[in-house]
Picture 1 (tube, helix red, strand yellow):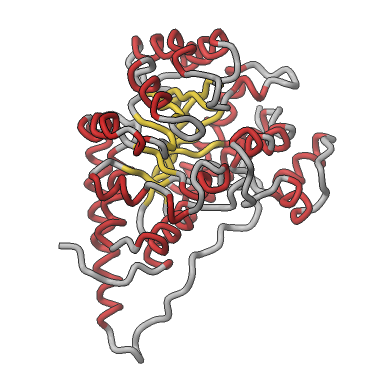
Picture 2: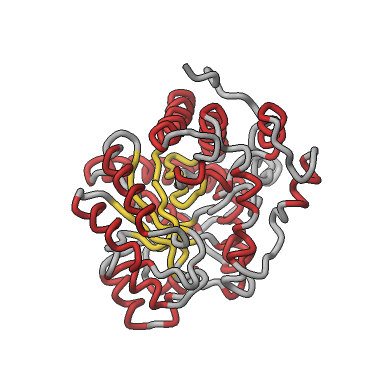
Length: 382
């Protein structure tokens, strides 16, 4: 039995978490962007963190997903070298580990990092090496999802699928389709997904964010998606909703991002709680830690605030994240058992504090801040 105790920011920070939907090019540190721009001679819209945040409309609401995606043009301008990719991947994993994320799946499209002549294989390896460095330092489990882009040609997606096949079991955990959803149907990229499925590789698809349930149906029935990214409009089709639930297809919820892009009107109207109550396997993720100015802990805090989640609700959601990871069955099962034990120990510890006499109980602080900007070890790659 899970004790019925207050769900504090401190508890949410302490619990083990996953981030299964996190874009590398949307999750840099502002200070790192400025330093990379200075090193590379890249002109950014501002030369200080506050100005850069304003120029990129960080945490501000956008009129559409397409408008939201414009911010990536700025981040991508400094992500065209091996060192930059290595460093940002390393720092992202370090920041995730700082809030006790035990497992992250970092997604990005290698084709967007070729402006200065890098080869796609070099792009993949630079990111994987950065993640491995963070794993050695913190123990965090980190892998890559290669992204095809909806608004690029299906041939580009096929080349990226081939890249995913080449790096199967070498750090690439799966394949994704991202980009502007409206007017760019997933079924156009069916050949890439067929290659992925033929090679027994996991896949997810951004769907039901800027377009309705037919987009989710295409992701499932044309692309064979094992998870759905965002999926906020799934509730509009009850039959499809039941299909997703019956087949235990996880939904990668990114609530703050959905508000920022206009996919939902406000946090109170987000379908997360409806999905949770209905029995869907919902996971909580950041989408873009920089552009949305968020962490998994912040997302959980928002869900508790707006929907009154109990400790049991939070535990179920977090366990669902680990159950949904693109790992082998045995690795996933072992990890789930481990984190369930850790969760129960942490909850019991907080319950004991909650029952302690008021004059002896320690103060409950807010969510810990991420570590200051730092350069990764061995950032100068051979």
